[in-house]
Length: 348
Image 1 (cartoon, rainbow, N blue to C red):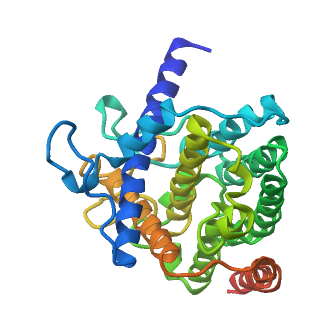
Image 2: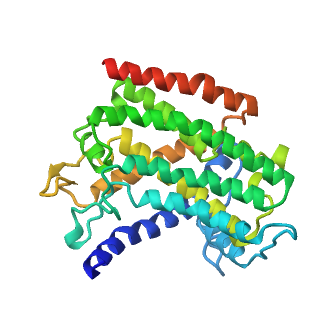
């Protein structure tokens, strides 16, 4: 591997691996403030600049939580499988971080202004998205099994059943976009939606987007599909026996997965980085660029945060489903609807 190739990969991946974990801290603060507003509470408002009375609306709370997690004692049950107990939170974080590296983002930095920030330009990137996201299911079950705790094992088994069930309509909803574009390349899919020709504006594209978003909530264990960690039934689910930095890795993995699945939804249905003020042209590599450098990535991130805001709103609004309702909704409603949508799009 040449030095130039290594440099290009680092330039492509380092911004994503720094920016999105940084946005994770802001997202936790935003969610806590939004849920507090929905529930008529104040939320974090005291933690701000250290040694001062400046609270900054509680913006220092994520930093305080991070410091607490780093120095908190790591407790491992005596009968636990220590190796897999350690590997599970790491494996839960890796798939979401890998998916971020394949989103068709652009950053206006130097000569890389018009080059998308992707570690690898795969022609089959959409298949890679779904293939690598399946590792999260294995990590969650590994955490429940390695803890040697019946509640953790039950939470892990619930997670596997839920994620496998909702992965099918999730993939089938993406088939609509692949049929429209005729390509599995994420950059090509985003480029095909330039000029406000977003797939969500078509009837079958809108239906596919709704199915995709609902299935994404279940894939990321967000309300009302957060049964794997139902505190009222199984304490805290698959990470009951986790504390300290290992618990923080599960927490980080869940939020990074929210960014990853929202970024995939933006790429497939919401036009990628297209938006008002963006003039898309084709450069010699056939990749999109814009008249105002940086506007594309701003629109991309704004769309991601809009989807995350809807996820937070649903968490503060909807009650948790029962297990039978959860599985029945996937197999009796979501799956037939996604197959019917494919047939309608094929005949249209």
